Image 1 (cartoon, rainbow, N blue to C red):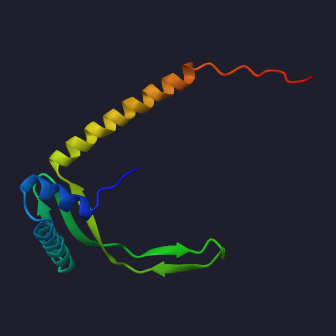
Image 2 (tube, one colour):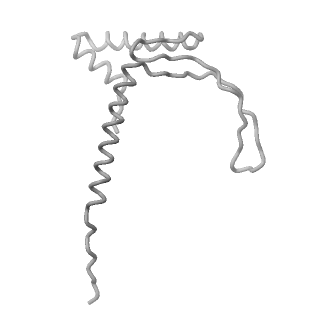
Image 3 (tube, rainbow, N blue to C red):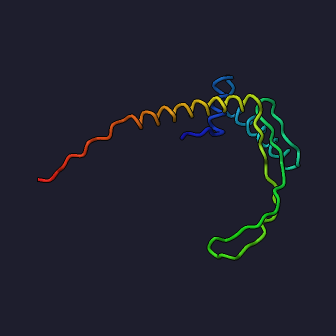
Length: 124
């Protein structure tokens, strides 16, 4: 499955706006740097209709080594980033989930209806 990279974003914006790719890359990189700096300083980032990035601290928890039964250790709390999708993103992804579900249901129907090939007896 293909993925969208920063380079893909830069090329698409450059083609749509007519700006030089180097300038678009600089703007995209500065945007990402500003988001990262804000999160690193415990400042949530809200992008309307896209979503909210919020720094949070995980709870300490007990970890176990499956190769050494009976051994356990405490995994300390650490800072992570929580993302909550915005309204428009949620709606568009929900539409995708309905389409994927319909496609998988359709594929399942075809597979159950397909006749199995008859085996020939190859004794000779």
